[in-house]
Amino acid sequence: MKLFKKTKIKKTINKKMKRRSLQRQILLPFLLLIILAGGAVAYTSYQLSMNAMIDQNSDSVVSQTENLNDHLLKQVDLDMNVDD
Picture 1 (cartoon, rainbow, N blue to C red):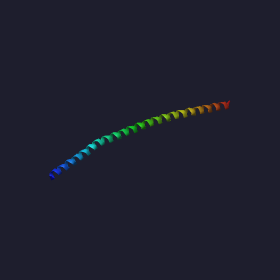
Picture 2 (cartoon, rainbow, N blue to C red):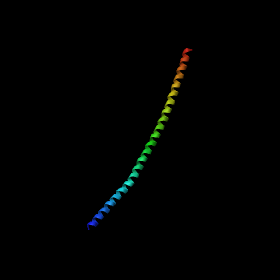
Picture 3 (cartoon, rainbow, N blue to C red):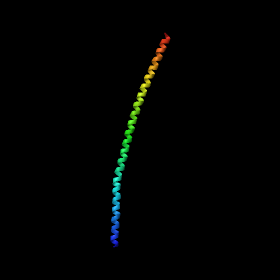
Picture 4 (tube, helix red, strand yellow):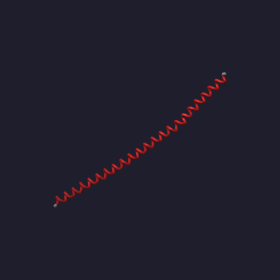
């Protein structure tokens, strides 16, 4: 009778160990998948933000340069008109 209880206990323990092992085997790939997906989303978001910022800064520099050129040309015109 005691032998039967011991083997039954061992089987129960083995089943629990297998179940935990199976849970870990499933958990780790899901965690890895979630982490990799989050990393991919973060990287893509970063790249898109950087490209948008670079484009916006380039447009701003072009606009400021055009305004400066217009201002300088007006100043040159005014200076030439004053000299006349």
